[in-house]
Image (cartoon, rainbow, N blue to C red):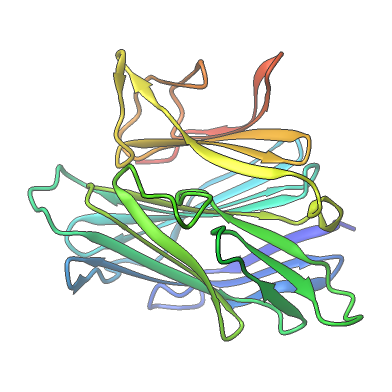
Amino acid sequence: MKKLSVSIDYQSYNDGSVFLDVAIQNESILTGFWTFDVRLGKKGLIPESRWTKICEHMEKGCEYTEIELHLSEDYRFQRSLLLNHKDKHLLLADSILAEAECKTKKTLSYCSDVQVSPKLRAKTSGEATEIEYQPFGRSGVPGFRVLPLALPEWKASTPVGLVSGKLIATEGRLVLLQATTGRSLFAPLLFDLDAERLSKRYTWRQLTVGEDLQLVSEDRAVGYRIQLGKRQFLLYRSLTPQTNRTVLGHNLIDDFCFARFDPESGVEPLIAVEVAE
């Protein structure tokens, strides 16, 4: 029996809805519709197709699934789920991809939310952007922590790139808001599902991505370094057609890569995929 499980239903609905259930030892911690709202300026981008699965991959104790639908105004919306059984964490990530170079200066804004188990209560901080969920009384549901990787770790930090936003716990739902002045946007949430690790050190930061000895803007590719206790990880996502780039001294031609990182041995990819175009 798997200790961690994730299931999604994206085929039963015609309006772009996705039903998500995340469980630990058969106890659901997230369950309900995983919603989204995407806007270009004040105009909402609406689904113009049904969800299709574009990638499914399993390697080194990790399960990866990616689905896609087309939005109005020549945008694609890709939704990724990565479950790492060995390291006990889950990545839920949305990518909003412009089909062509944008000729507008309008802000691209994004909102998603998902229902959290009523057996859990949110613990927020006035200083930090992450949210920790703890069980009510003796409910038996394990706690977890959520890291909004595209946002600064500290609320007082001034965004230095194209992206701004916030992570909110409200009325039993977890809500992520992001906005960018760039052409595309990546919105990742990392769930640390190891309750025993919640008292350990954790941090994350955005990395510099290079291409042909030039810095790459975050609406073209992003990289993040994450520390959970003693373990460190690398997340990379390209938002443009495939090309060779470098992050943390590691060359990548993949669209998506999730890896363990060791300061001595370097990068050990756990999942590396080329997302269908």
